[in-house]
Image (cartoon, helix red, strand yellow):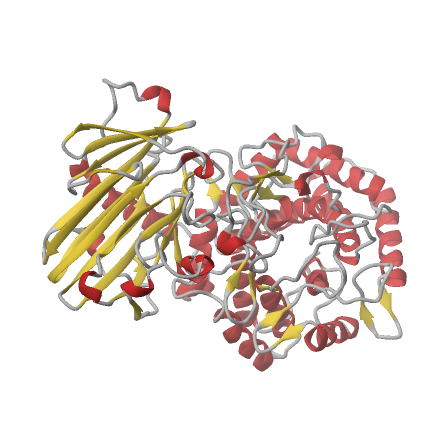
Length: 636
């Protein structure tokens, strides 16, 4: 079968598992696998994380921001999971390695036991094309590949973030439904699943070489699952749908313009991850696939990132556009225009992936959090903050599309004119900045530079589009912005740009100033700023902190992965190629064996939400900078 090709993206991992140290015993916090143990699967609608142990510990259907139906990632006892793994009977250890099949989000895990070998293939089913409704279907296939392997299968749905145990009904051989809260699952399988006393299904099965078992798990609204009328998903179509899914990913990758950066499989993997975070019906891109994975174990810096930030999305979609994936940037443009209803002075920093503007931040006290990191949150209060840089990113994204020959719709240009006007009305205000600090707002230099960029790019857009705008007033405002930044945002004693008008602190966001043309990459002021950030914010070979100031939150955090790649980009485009390459190699080591990056890292483990879109965008940007090896030509 086509889907049984060997995984091409594979950094072999030989990880032994001892049943005596099962995650069900011992220290409660230690039950949770490291974040790096997880692999992403998705269909641009739903999303799941599969552990190296073959367990789906996070799954949100029918949308990636829906309440979880498997959420053991955030509460080992209450969250629910779907595991298929060697039983480990008689104290036998077993090993696993894994990889993605081709350039897809179809994940293969290979198990080796003392008695035999098996492989598990996991994916969300994709349709071959057109605008047909998504299948909302999780596919799992396990096949014996040598000797004999005894497997334990445990399917424990827990709806509404673990708050609702399911009502499970059997409708025939290998045919079940599970209903709870606002979700329903239709389960078809040729595994000998039977009801367990834990409100779930379980089986133990022995597979010999060549034997294959399949599971199809489809989401459906519980109101559609009447006792006598459930809709089965034929298990005999699973192999065909896996092949169709692989074909879909192959065609998407082939649609690129052939950018040389994509010859690097790690860069292409980052592009595929970004695609997996896009919500296809609207074009929105989620900042990450999870909520409340902590920035410090046991701490309270736990946020929901399953929403679309203008800033992060603009970064990600700009990188996809540079690699030739243009349709995604166009889809996001439509999403923003719809979500804001074309009213520029009401643009928020973040929207729901369906365009929702109300995103109240709610705590879920019934969940213990990953490794005891409370609280678990859904929604995000950042939606109510003033973040001036996001509006600047919008205009910059439109200009970058123009540079690639993608002319925006006239109505969108009119909207951008209003965005520039809104920025000019507010740029003198302090804001919460790129890091969304929950403290008194400041006049952050990065935010002011993005206001400058909005005006600068706005002038270029209206000139190119032949649209009338108050360009003379805009030019004067642009000059005023530059003068303010160079006076208040640059410290002559240190010879560097600083975090905010109010302080002399450094901030890794300053590494982004050349990206929008405010200052040349090799400007002496920028060179000194990069050197200072390297001295004061860098930790070890690979890590870079965001800042050192009090941000209004208790506890500490890890180092932000994207900042390491921003530093690589600056070093590379300042001609310091050897330094850049060494840091790039070290930063790439922050990925897991599947090439996935989290939000943060502390030098020993991943931290924060996972996989993080901004980390993957920054990885792509750094790789492109290293390939070019010289400052780009002026962007205006």
